[in-house]
Image (cartoon, rainbow, N blue to C red; front, side, top):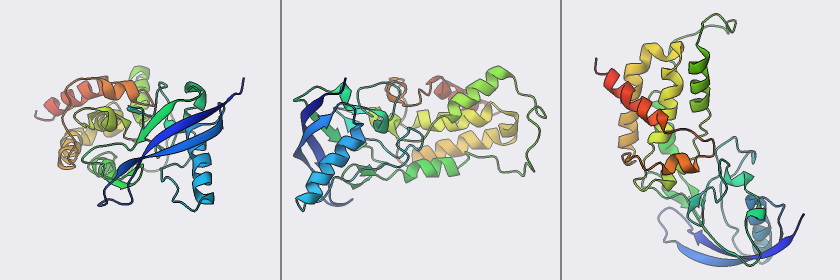
Length: 249
């Protein structure tokens, strides 16, 4: 049943990459429990615009949990308190009337704040460009059964390919490691015959790009898997490590 609530928001505001930031307090009044979290921010921004103030800047696009654009820390958790969803899929029914909600950008040395809750995730593009593709010409699309792939491997590759590159894994990791993202991209190709010719160079180059971007190392905390909106398994990190060992022979 729909209810309304009044909330207090503590939001990180930062005018630009080199400007100092600070937490600012806002009221979110008469918010429907059926609103998504981003719709709640839209309503707050409408009030700010009407008052002649700068709206809160945040990333968003599809609002269907597909694009990976949105992402922020809500009460210290990437994408908020619900499991297996992006922030655009989080609804206000998970909060109670009178609650104070702390909203911050994803924080990492490799994710510089651009403005307010928006961070620069170009570092992910650099990792992807270092090997997250098949470079040879594959020609026109073939029949589905032209290259046989065991179902177990096809399922694992599909699970890894579900990564949307939102950056929640980095934001939640105390080491700011991007190994869950990198390992998902390595895995989706390593499991398929089309990715086999370049697998040795792929894992080395993508790991080198990961380290060069300033991401930290993995210490098996599992925080990345816990907050991943696509429930990418940390077993991909184990596969990445095996791929790295394999690349030396």
